[in-house]
Image 1 (tube, rainbow, N blue to C red):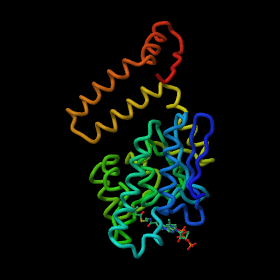
Image 2: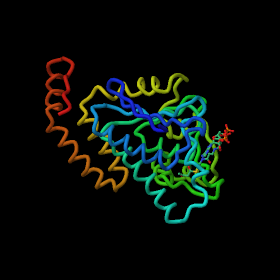
Image 3: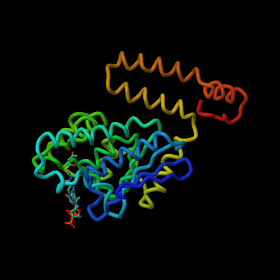
Image 4: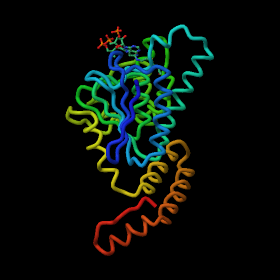
Length: 256
Ligand code: CAA
């Protein structure tokens, strides 16, 4: 299988497993990824780690051989499949991290951008090279990239197809952190450990407030925050968290 889903303790692990083609995404892989994400959403996992198999590449983008000679309607359906699947990733009820240890190009970087977080080793190289093929990104890149790094830098990457390294990506805010090279799954686990000990409800509401706020005006975003923070306040976990603070003990969250 080119998409592998496994579970390890509180973590769901999705591996793009097509190293002979640098994990380039065929449409069947995107469909399999969508199925895997449904399973993750219905599991007890507290975080998702996305990695690419092999030493060289997280994912080199859409499979260019498969992209060739398609009629326009098929191409549009393909773009919508990628967008829908990556939107499903962004909307998971748990946070996700893409571990970039090599190439993350085109659709591969778009996949990573749909995760909550991205971490990169020093060897990581990122870019949206579609323009070099006479194309533009089709799986969300033109929309998520400016939201992450701003319009001017997004235009620079999308319009030049330039490859950036981990240092530049961290400086621009495209990756959260540069980490020492190692087993990608372990790197993902150790990064996510900081986020998985809290109430799942509070974690979800926090992420949702940020995510929905980014897609709307400040005034509407503040309304969303008022609603979601009130909802968080109503949970048993909030009562437990505040009580534990007063009683000077560690809270026991139950995700409710
Ligand atoms: N699609 C299909 N096959 C790919 C691929 C891709 N995107 N990227 C790499 N491969 C294949 C190569 O064809 C090669 O296979 P063969 O051995 O059968 O020839 C194998 O993977 C190894 O690749 P290279 O020999 O090219 O490895 P390299 O180390 O010399 O170069 C690279 C690595 C710079 C990433 C180079 O492979 C490359 O430029 N790949 C294409 C990157 C790209 O343009 N991505 C965007 C795709 S379009 C897209 O993603 C649209 C969208 O928005 C959804």
